[in-house]
Image (cartoon, rainbow, N blue to C red; front, side, top):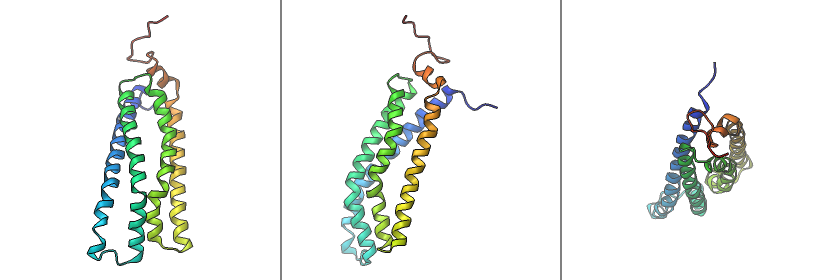
Length: 175
C-alpha cells in the first residue's frame, strides 16, 4: 500500500508551511507584548520569589531577539508556503533552504527560549543540565526531522512537479 501521491504531499507541505509561518508570527507578537506586561508585575508583589524574578528578567532580556527571529522566519515560511502551493519553481529551493534554516533559527532562539526555564530551575547543576539537555534534544530532533523531510522533498517526483513535468502540470514546451 503506497502513501499519498507526491502532488498531494506537496499540497500538505504548502498548507503546513503557511500554518507554521503563521504560528511563528503569532509567537513573535506574544514575545513582543509580554515584556510590557511583565513590566507591571513588580508592583503587584507577584515577583517576590527570586527564581520568578530571575525567570522574568531572562525572558525579557531575550524576548526581542527571539521575536525578531520568529517574525522573520514566519514571514519567510508564509511566502514559501504560498509559493509551494502554486508550484512556483523558486519555492522548491527556497523550501530546502528554509528546512536547513529551521535548524539555524532554532539554535538562534534556543538561549533566549531556554534561559527563563534555566532561571526557574535555579543554580543547581541538575536543573540546569536538564533544561539545556532538553534543548539540545529538541535541536537534534529538529535536525532529524529536516533530514527526514528532505528525503521526500528532494525526490524525483517532487522535483518534477516544480519543473512543470509532474502529474497534473502542463509539460514544459521550451526546447
